[in-house]
Image (cartoon, rainbow, N blue to C red):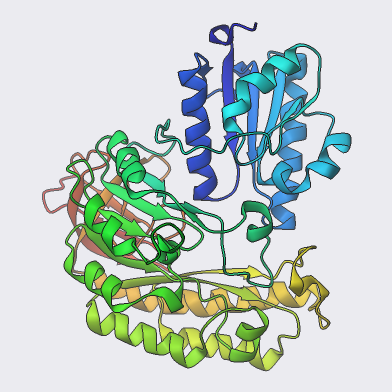
Length: 444
């Protein structure tokens, strides 16, 4: 038997915030099994790479990271573990070719980590993909700054968008029980901002309870004294109903912000993508949200250069942005992924054209954002302090209309500020996405 209390574990988490939560749960399993966790991967005896496989670029990044990690085997590193989406989907190809890895685990195999390592220390290369129980784990080792955390309320997806591999990797949509999620949220300690995530948070509960339960879990989570506020990411437009709108509007602990992935604006492309809704329905939804929830911030994502997309349709997406006036957006060039229906479509758009269309949309959104945020100059904003920005020699934080890592920041001066605390900031300047300001009592 290997004494894992004498081993240091390091972990690199790639991809989305949902992957991050999985990584945090795996770290908890490691610590509960006696392993020590280190932030310095050069100190690690056992190094884990939790991979993303959503896009070809994600897979390339994962492989490059794994190979880079393997170079440490001539130092402290003894075992390299590859887990997550990449082996879950591609273990048949990886096992023979990616010889740098000693152990492979899938997305539901974390309970097998120590058994797999025992086998590896006996000299085996280990493929344990699909061998685990996939049991729910409410314990985590938080890797975000302590004042905010993600809560993954479901896994998998039923939407079957024609460009997306997620259902092939993660399977069908599975909601986690409310009581387990409440336990997990309580275990996080004091959290200024709890961010709910899933492939589609608005579908939460249908598979488990026979009806949507997002409103109910929001009501329960916001009763917890350790949770100061809740932010919602990834709300599919066709699933946003009056009950959810009322809860976001009336519950003071819910941040008035929704991430709604539209993915396109033109009806023909939306149909090819197997996305529910239309340009008119999306605009009507935006109007309704703004009428019902004054000041609500709305973020979205769009895919450029989907097969057969014409220049006219690309231009129409720019027009949609100008009409929609979204607060924040992400734009992505379509990625042709094998094993998706869109892969077989004729009329694939050259990469150079896709990138050009992405650039154009960013230019349009930059103008919109610049005009929206400059209206805050001369006004006070409630800002959550995320810490110190040493490069700018000031504090940095976020207003309600910004989620961590993906949206703009507020850079501010103050005599003192504490990470995780809120401050009223007088806004004195702006650029394309960020604001600058100070506390009223700030003195040079």
